[in-house]
Image (cartoon, rainbow, N blue to C red; front, side, top):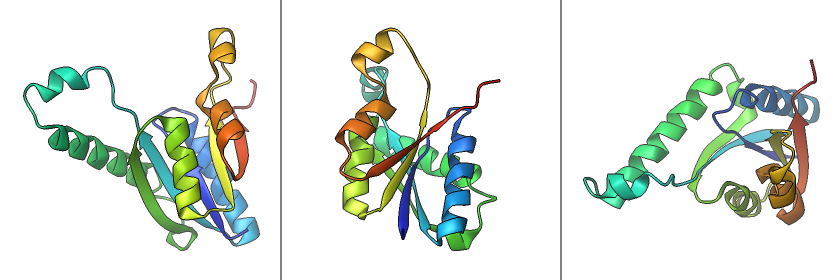
Length: 143
């Protein structure tokens, strides 16, 4: 295993996903490609009235990049190959980035939802079902 794509978001479980990826990279000698997908929220239409679309997307991309940098500040630099931010539907953006970056494995977190999410499918489920790479889903331990 040489390259691992780590799907990070702003949820509390992102730290566990990152820790799992760092541990696996250390054990296998792999490099981590840190990834964040930005979905455009419904509020964007209102923001576009006062800002250009490029300005809004640029601001969202910079914020996501800064959040990844803060989250990964303690990750040994020799393990990190790069940081990638992509605009799009999260599950699809993860699958596209995995293919574009030619990674060996994708590591993502699971919300562990039930009910309607099980019918419609979570981001993790869609990545597992659609990604052409192996996927490791990190679940939050039950307390």
